[in-house]
View 1 (cartoon, one colour):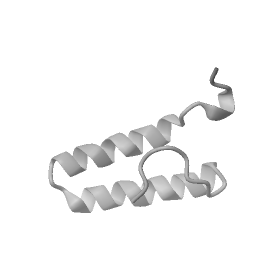
View 2: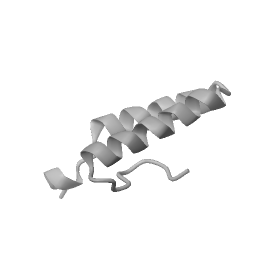
View 3: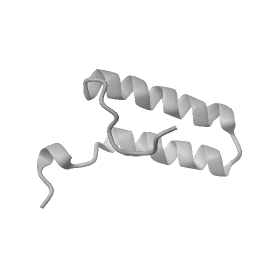
View 4: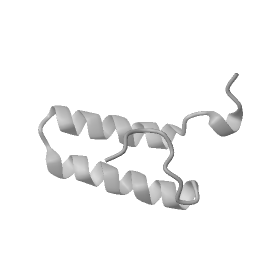
Length: 56
């Protein structure tokens, strides 16, 4: 059973998807931008915790 605290963060998932799309389109600059934005979001909204998604 998934509790609310364990549910994936929609914003984190959107960054993960955008990064995957950028990778598929061979756009390393946008890929990096997605990782930076996801980390900023994690620091602000998840108290700096890595939250789901891929590790660089």
